[in-house]
Structures are given as structure tokens and as C-alpha cells.
Length: 150
Image (cartoon, rainbow, N blue to C red; front, side, top):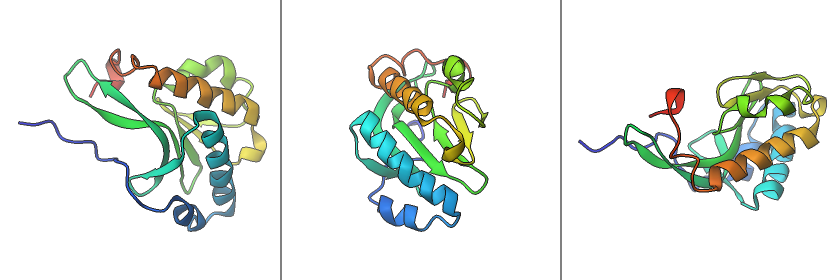
């Protein structure tokens, strides 16, 4: 039986239309700012992944289980409660920077920020830069295990 494909895949949906439709004014403003930041850092243009994630570039992963695929190398989603910023290499990788970021919460690979005006954008930019570089170097996805093992 063939492995199940990723549920979140790139689409041809219009990123600007998606952002314009974000109801919460702070999330909408922050989405526009993150598009500028991530475009500058990655050199990639934004693309919708699924219906709610704005992604930049791709990386290929292969888990020890044999599952493999492509995923966004950087990205975010303006959610109702907070903007979710994705770090495929894990947020804990950036513990040194998180201390100086400002108000936030974290998950395994997600950073949650309620308002970009309250965080140090230089710190966030460095986190995105390091993460993007790590996952696009060509070796990241081959060493995943534990919670990231498909």
C-alpha cells in the first residue's frame, strides 16, 4: 500500500486574497509583515499550502519509517487566537533566541505570537533565517526521529 500523501500541499490560491480576508486586524497586519520578512529571509515568494498556511520554499524529508515528502521550509498561519509561525526543525532549537523574543508561547515546531508589535523582529528574523537554512541544506529531513518521525 502506497504511503498516504501529505494533507497540506501547495495550492494556487491567492495569498493576497487570503490575507485580505483575515478577520482579526492584528493578525491581518502581522500576516502582511511576515510575508515581507519571510520573502526577504528566504528569497522565496509566498504560496498557499492548504487553505490557511502561507509557505515559503520547500524541503524534502524522509523519516526512518520510510515516509517521505515535501513540506514548506518556512511559513505561518494567522489563526484566531494567535499567529502560528512554523519551525520544522523544532522551536527548542532556538532556546537561546526565544529568551529575547518577547511574549510568545511554543509547541514542538510552532511559535505562537499574538502581536508582532510586542516582539523583537530582529530575533524572529534570525530564527526564521536559521531554520530555513537548516531545513533547506539537504540533510535535515533524513535525521528526524521521535515526534517528527512520520
